[in-house]
Length: 305
Image (cartoon, rainbow, N blue to C red):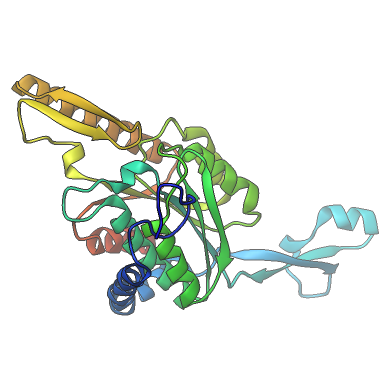
């Protein structure tokens, strides 16, 4: 039985292994049905490979495309040489998974981490059906764990289990840390899903750098209670990331409006960051249907291609 001295990163505290496996299995059954019925074909139509990768340089032969001539090698060798490329078949999909304390919040029957686990399962099962590798960078305000890219059902279930039950060492969120780590460990272009509520210090610069190297998609998890508080009077709220209790006076309509305006401004600033750097963003509320926003994302991407 785990106690207060358990090491961070274990998959359960007061949960039994049977409960953990049951929840992961339920997510697998639900999401694989969605993949088979909805997302597998859409994923394949959008992520079919990122073009061509370099194979070799060889001497020019009659009939070769002169646009492929490597002029540097040609100058050194004194004879025309061309670059040959091969089509990229296998993609690497990396999830940047925010496991900070705010992910445990949810007012609609599911927490953000519950929602994140299901979305990651849908995308990861779609990826392995497309013969792509899947990996993850699990982060808070530090990189908590790196899961190297691999294939197969067991690997995807391991990833889902980490999202649901990982116990982070830290509580706060810093997307910059995860993006910088991605740039160090990912040597070739890939697909990157950043799954977070983005309640983070500014991450514009590393996001721009990552977007130049990878196809980056933001999965933005929100909860309606973070934007609209219906109660009034003195309200006790628990700040998950700061680990302190706060008392907010919502006794007046003006106070509630200030809260709503602050949340709206924060959301607009985050959305502006994604637009500025050309990042596709899928915004999903906890407890709501995520099939529609994901389908819209795939259809829009396929239309642009």
